[in-house]
Image (cartoon, rainbow, N blue to C red; front, top):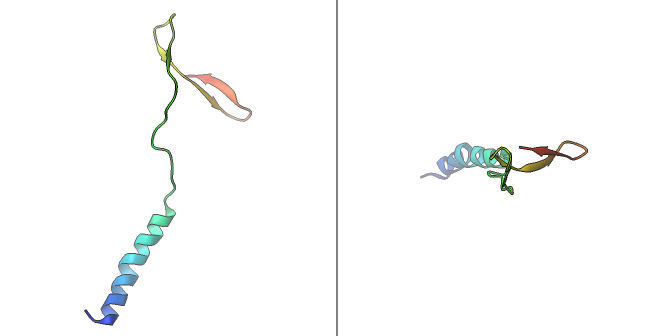
Length: 59
């Protein structure tokens, strides 16, 4: 390969790939929460604190 084709390959392959990698955000892929069983309804529930100010929500 000639030096010119190597530099063109670098421009059109490596740079867009590195830019797309930099644009991704790291978000959690899973939620781990303590789960309990409600004895009255026999459903599984968990509590998550959300909103501002924090409020408990039963899910």
